[in-house]
Amino acid sequence: MGLFNITHPAFFLLTGIPGLESSQFWLAGPLCVMYAVALGGNTVILQAVRAEPSLHQPMCYFLSMLSFSDVAMSVATLPTVLRTFCLNARTIDFDACLIQMFLIHSFSMMESGILLAMSFDRYVAICDPLRYATVLTNEVIAGMGLAVASRSFITLFPLPFLIQRLPICRSNVLSHSYCLHPDMMKLACADITINIVYGLFVLISTFGMDLLFIFLSYVLILHSVMAIASREERLKALNTCVSHILAVLAFYVPMIGVSMVHRFGKNVPRYIHVLLSNIYLFVPPVLNPLIYSAKTKEIRRAIVHMFHHIKM
Image (tube, rainbow, N blue to C red; front, top):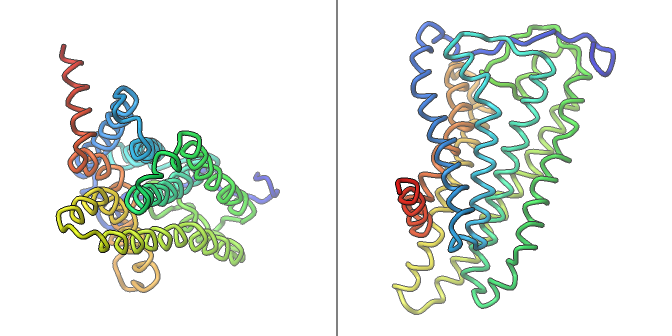
């Protein structure tokens, strides 16, 4: 019995990849590797930034926030994904599903907000470098991190209650190996207009606005870079943005792909929908530490230095 005195199923059944149930066990290996890279890579970056004094600078603090968000996202999805693919244990309690849904959406929104904050960091560093240290102080960075976390919590706090108010009686089988708001609301045998409208509002007012401001920041950055006389200096300035641009693409391209397929791909097989959703959740946490460790010399040097000390 739920908060709104409406009957809900005691549990949901999670789904691996529709139509490929017999062979999805073989995906357990690659999934374990992806989780190991995501958790290990992001943990290494967090430890490197904590231990290396030369990395105590705004860009690296924002990178730490991004790594923390990726670790949290991986931890939120790991139990149900591995249970579904490795053990074929598909059940999840109703309340546990609500918690996982809230955590997945929250950490995803936090990642979007952190990417926006990182674009502001790049904007100040390139367009107003003399004021960089005075604009992005430790207090300002901490305030930005708190604002990103608070926005996620406040905006998404209503989601579990919007699900709890719905009688779920069509089925208790979800389309993924984790819980998402759109997936859960489709099982309701009642009007879900409020859920749809609120979900669209959240998508546009957070992810949509974040992407818009990231785009505008790079328009201003390009305008500033083009004013630099030296070609070498222009390339040097743009090179400092490459890691962030790749991280933005790794996050938003799968998200847009999932949205387009859900909106226009009515005839696309279900397993394509599921695969794209999995790419959206699993790929950014895997790619981000690889991108920043490969493209950022300071991070790479700090990681090598850290492992050298461990061996000694």
